Length: 119
Image (tube, rainbow, N blue to C red; front, top):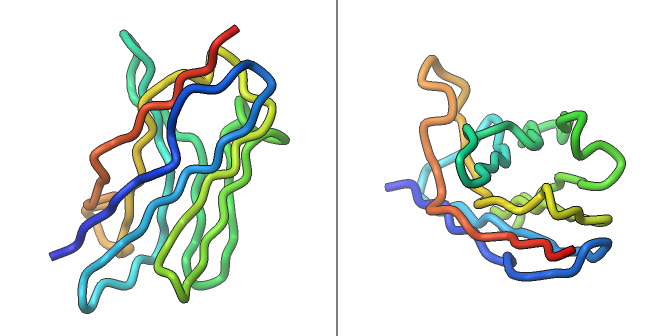
């Protein structure tokens, strides 16, 4: 059974930083890609960043480019999202997701973690 567990959220002032972590577990689980999504109150879930597990290639949404950085530590089975220069509009529940590269897309999701940025 595959599990994704997020940590590192919380409350921070505008301009501050947080680092989110997402640890995956499962005896034979080997993701092809993992990603961060977020959902603000009253809004649809939106893509934040993606990383390809094997080669480490990344993509970031335009809204976070230059402020957020996605990375992973293969030895720890953990993905990270370093968030700098946080803005109130970054306030949302952040979810990590994983894909095994098949037609299901991001088939595995974490429970979500709250990030709140005060002005």
